Image (cartoon, rainbow over all chains, first blue to last red; front, side):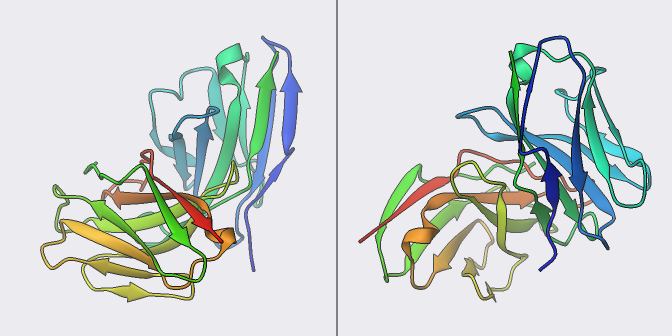
Length: 114
Length: 111
């Protein structure tokens, strides 16, 4: 069964450092998403991406965040200068279309900022 | 996005049907009801979705009331592995289809 894969599973970084979280969406999917979940809190939408551009972003997704699809298979989330409050699980998701089909999630990257 | 209301927690005996309710009284005519679950801190797992007809797949059944103001997710024979947080989400049509997660229902399946 096809799945969304994320690497690394756990990343520890120092405050102020840049991190790149990587995702390989399901191969025939066209829409890509990042969500995050701070420990004990809700899953929060960050950004959606379609046709090589951002479709929608939340208030959380400020100038410190960027997304990219550098090739035909990877989808990345970059945090330019990490803060302690960026510590969270980051989930990548993909869906075949935007509206009516289900989004499939990866297992997440646990980001710890120290 | 239309809001949903779910009980914070439920228990179910293994082998029994788990019936998880959800209220979405402000749902619009072209909004779908989606159900996801999250086991521990794993990525949310898609279960089922529907517009107005009842739906069934290998995991669960979704019963949507005629007025579409509420729905029930049914796990016909719950197992210990179904212990998870279950999210009922109404998805806004015409957007890039973000999912807005609430706090969900924590289902505990017991022996």
